[in-house]
Image (cartoon, rainbow, N blue to C red; front, side, top):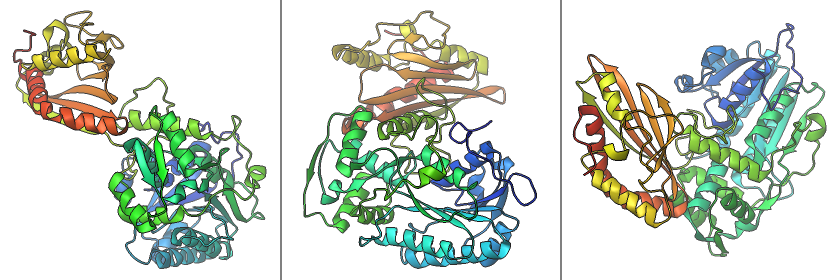
Amino acid sequence: MPSEITSDLPLRRGKDGLPALCLVTGATGYIGGRLVRELLAHGYRVRVMARHAERLRFHPWIDKVEVVDGDATNRDDLTRAVAGVDIAYYLLHALMSPQNFEDEERLVATLFGEECFAAGVSRIVYLGGMADSDSTLSPHLQSRADTGDILQNCGVPTIELRAGVVIGSGSASFEMLRYLTERLPIMTVPKWVNSRIQPIAVRDVLRYLVGAASLPDSISGDYDIGGPDVFTYREMMEHYAAAAGLRPRIIIPVPVLTPRLSSGWVGLVTPVPYTLARRLVASLKNEVVARNDDIRRLIPDPPAGLTKFDRAVSLALTKIKDAHVDTRWSDASLPGSPSEPLPTDPDWAGGTLYKDVRVVHSTDSVDEVWKRVESIGGDNGYSTASWAWEARGLLDRLVGGPGLRRGRRDPNHLVEGEALDFWRVESLRPPNVLRLRAEMRNPGLAWLEFTVEAEGTGAKVTQRAFFAPRGLAGHVYWWLVWPMHGLVFPSMVNSVARGRKNKRS
């Protein structure tokens, strides 16, 4: 079905009259996986090139694209990848290379440009980094600019889209912003927090990338792309905290934090790898504000306008909380939004989600086990450790939560959406899945899920507890209650799998 973010854009045809064949490099990356989805939704034919093509197997679009398993540093692999291509998307970088990433990026860009020219590619579209050419650039931004120059001088019409901070789950810059803001209610920060930045939502980046494919070949050059807001990094953290429902952050800039110290600090507080953090932090000294809005005359704004920063953050956070437990969970979510995390996002993307997973094999049938799963809670209790849940319910009532007083509507059967003690039945798919969302008072979002699968004549029961912390208090809470997990969670999964006593005393 057509994508809501590109449905009003024209579709480019190839030399054969069919929808243009687009090559997407970096398809295992953050932008690449989403771009493939958008191009397909818009009607394009797509070929992807990946050094580790096996990582693509989880994408829902894998059966709709051609796959070239190859290395962009290998000319023969590039020759195979660009053969017959109309539009080539260059989404490659070497930021995680331990040394000399600039040399590697120049080599790959040169080879790519030469092979595209030899194959008669009609256009290259490159996503680079926004930078002020009058300033001394960081190695990262200078390498991005050098890559753009190489591609624009290869003989193929090239559109270079220069972005700053991309707002969406999986973006390294966004994850760094998010973790710093969530985990540190009080922070001393380097002076780069006063650098001005023009962030852009990932959905708008994708619109520009898809739109660039249909521009006339006579149009080439670099174009800055940014959202409607310009903030300092400090203001971005403050807006993020408000959008995430956090208390206002106390931010104290100090002049003594060097880029090296800042990188180590970011690497400690966030899950962004140190090598990547070091190169991103070094770039924050440069202001990244669009020099002009020429791109908006070539590719019009979406009907609803470019996405405001606060809206982009809210979309990304909704998807982070929903998508990491692999189901539809929130009425506020937007199915199919490009902010949604994909299976091949970096493993540090998508935020902290604590998990406790227990698996028990039962000799009882699926139906027998399901009866015990569906009767959990209320007067039936949770396990031989129901006293622990009662204590948690009492604590919840003391701080204004519902506690366990709501009980159950029916002792044996549940209905999706109903209250169950301090839970809400979020998903019910008899006789296989029960998922409960916590409505108790705690600093984060919590779920408890049971899945029952047939296993020979018996059943396998998987119990998963998830907790998405909110701010530093959420992380502290998880580790404070963690010792109790070894008591209550094994007891609970055994009670539903093997029928042990679980009545309240």
